[in-house]
Image (cartoon, rainbow, N blue to C red; front, side):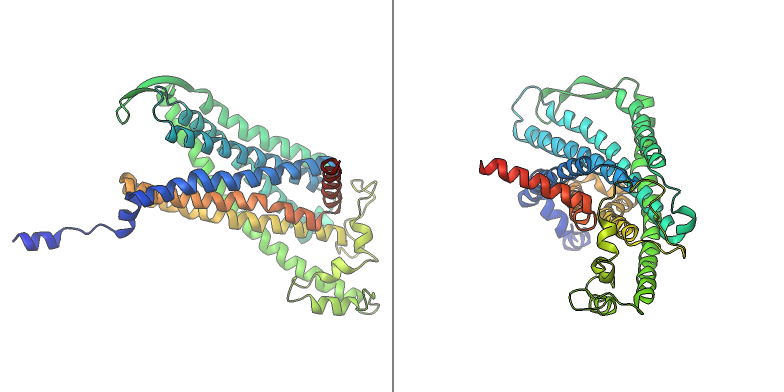
Length: 396
């Protein structure tokens, strides 16, 4: 009887057993409080360079303003997350102090990171919609997204997102409470108006983690598909227009360059190597933001400079999709299997994957610099100038 009863007992999953063990806890802590801060520090450095480079090169066009704003929001997001991880890690190490307030400061900062994350998402959506419209209907939207309109939209995004976060953040206050785990008095956060705070917290979480991410992922994915198809179509059109009078570049014609690059760069090398048009147009122009600079020609074909801008925006959006997709998967699992996260092993498993997702997203915000450096001539010159000045100062 006892043997049959023992056989009927449910067997615990080995994965949960591992995360309940000391090795599982160490893996959880290592990912969240060592690997995450390291990646976030790299992202902070990368976005700091982005901000300085865009300020140095100037913001005479709308896409530069969007990329500058995106770099600022990513910088603030990674800085806040880095600070939160360091504070929580310090609280876990120094548990002998009578007041364990570091973890609650980190908790408050983590609520602020959601604000910068949503701003980055909306700025990416704006960049995707803007450039998708320009390449899909160039004659209609070629001059619609002016610098002034871009500034207005960017300011509205920052204002709206910060405004709906302020009420919830303003309700937090310091409170003493007794922690049974450490048998000590701790200092933590409470709500000045708990019923209102809970409602605002739930509403904000639904906007930040469900509504904005899922809707933006769908919109950006559609824009990326359209931009990719239109870029291929534009490359084919330029190839046909130059087929009769192929430009010789490094001993090869435009047609040969296009065919040789089809496997490595998706058939766009002719745009980059067309030194008669692309190189000259890609250089910073004194009146690049004015209406006298044509985005399209008489046939509605985008100029090489605009195509390079759209390609950079397309890659930024693609990196965003890759970086945020794991977060959407974790959010769906959290909604479907929330009752299962009551066990410490299941919680450790969840936060381990959450830490890996954070590493992926923070890495995606750091690699944007390579896209800017490849496709933005003014950014590339600004970065080279900054590093040359830095090297001279170090050498002296």
